[in-house]
Amino acid sequence: MSNFHSRHIAVIGAGIVGLCVAERLLSEGHRVTVVDPAAPGGAQAASYGNGAFISPASVLPMSAPGLWRQVPKMLLDPTGALSVRLRDLPGLLPWLWAFLRAGNRPGNVARIAGDLNLLLRDAPARHAELAARTGQSDLIRQTGLLYAFRDRAAWQAECSGWQIRAECGVVMEDCTAARLRALAPDLSSDYGFGILISEGAHCVDPGGYVAGLARYLTVSGAELRQDRVLGLHLSGGQLRGLRCAGGDLLCDRAVIAAGIASAPFATEAGDRLPLAAERGYHVEIADAPFRLDVPVMPQDGKMANVTTRGGLRAAGQVEIAVPDAPPNWARAEVLLSHLKRSYPALAGRSHDLKRWMGCRPSMPDGKPVIGRASAVPEVIHAFGHGHVGLASAPATAEIVADLIAGRPPRRDSAPFSPARFGRGVALRGPT
Image 1 (tube, rainbow, N blue to C red):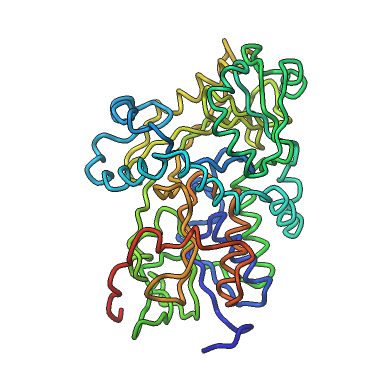
Image 2 (image 1 turned 135 degrees about the horizontal axis):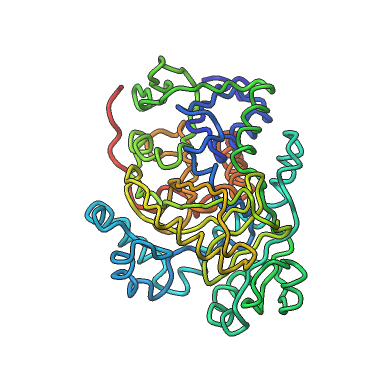
């Protein structure tokens, strides 16, 4: 076995999680190779088109008490904020059942929020530090995040969730209508109350941020290999390397951070995990007549509104479907319509518009899987972050680095263990 400082670690996946893991491991003296079939930061990745929020408030899981009553609407309304592709339902039933159970009690929601808080509580500061180290400080803005409501009554209808956030230590400021106008002058006057997360941050170019991390890693000594991983190379129950289309890659450790493509590798390592595609959409208006200095999430639309380098972006929607199902662009039109209602300056004019759809890797309980594979301890899982991948990537990298070093994680990794889904699968023979 190689000594600590000469370990060669292969990271499967060059999204935000994989590259944050690689950066942390490289900083600790490891030799690192990142393998991905596509160029980092491209539109094919969930990292590219997300809502750009880095929010300590994103601790609530999607599943909530009583959500089961909305299942018929999820199946019958293909443009609802949360929908399930009807034709994909047979294969998604086990995931959907586990998803509904995860949030079926208020205590479950509070517990999951507490677990996610381990990853998100200092996310803005961690990204600011990472951006500074990698020469990208201009891409992370710490101007706060604004959650807008029609009125205080609309907030009170969701107050249980905000109470959970407060119990997690999220710092919040009530905003009157006048305060809303000061923070977001172009927001419709229909919104009369808000919550400002003053410690929140955002990324003005998520795809560019990922590409910049990749460039930094290359200059710093990591290898970025554009190749397709076919599987793990196992012998006698131990990891020997990765089987790749372009030739095998020998390594001492492997980190599975391949997003929605992670499940087959996890199965090879002994863990059959319930990973589904939480497909999200965005629209981006390149010629918007204003900019948002403070990003906004109108709570009646549950979409992130942020000014990026590409324009005014509205990102959101949750569509549970198989990853390769064709996009339902009507969902992007829902985002555009809501954007025009939220900002009167956008109404009555044509726009230079871009649409995007991506597959966020989602576990039914809303928490990622971070931990050793049950049958191959040289393999570490780091995937399934759903819609908090950007925000939680630095904390995930810290946990992975601690596990590889064999030291007690500074953040409790137990809530993210693959073992929470039951016993793993039998280990496959040598490959």
